[in-house]
Image 1 (cartoon, rainbow, N blue to C red):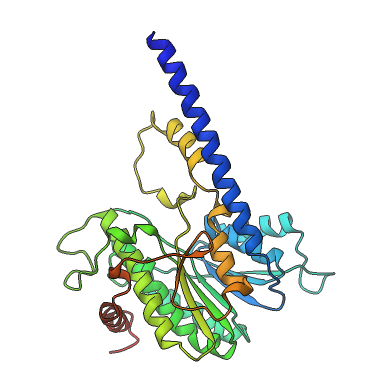
Image 2: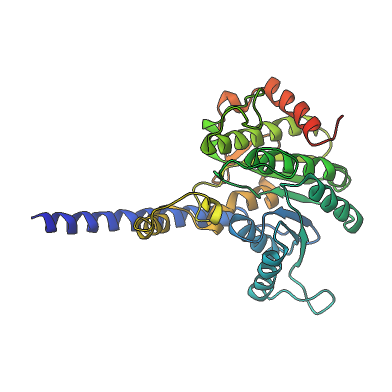
Length: 330
């Protein structure tokens, strides 16, 4: 009897897993068709683009003939991803035949303000225009560590690194208008709070809450930036990609015996990187969101936000403090 129950449970579970997988795939395909557009002649920077969501977004935008810059911390892994993408998409070298898109690799470590400044200086020297900036890179639930500049790692990388990078590239984005900024946040922002008395988590640290706080900071940053960019032709929108199978959870300890089950569950219930990247691609390229700014999207549709993510006073205070933390203001 017990064995039969186990078999039945497994069968039912397998059926549910397969159904969920099909539903996720259908949703992804629908979003992908909605994102179809031509990006020919447009330059796109994607942070953290050597794997996961960033790599998937890069591939799709290259298919739309964009000129894509992979902005990554690990140059070796980024070069490897670039080689794979060139082979996968049949990209040609500059000047060699009919190109579908152009792919460049540039190094940037968002845990180092010095690296961010060096990267932006290189971009401003090399690129005559910038049409889309996708702030995609992130770190998830890592043990308590600090960036090169002494910031709590998740807040430093997910928020402050992108805050400085975006501000340093704003002039180029404005001169290239109409242009777009896409901020990858997370639905987990709901569990975050902005504690101005302990932004570095030196008084207390919970890796889950710290991640949620950094994602809430992303939303508040996008909101305040959209306000500041009104009338410039530069739009900024944020998104949540859903639960995606990426290496973002590499800092989470999973018991060895549980990993096979987790792999099965993630295959069935989690989105593939391509499915998860659809909203990023949509916001970067779709004519449907031309001129739309200051919004939050999921599944290529506008989504509501909790009041904590639409508090303009908190957004402006966070902006002011962030300017001082990254050295834009003394």
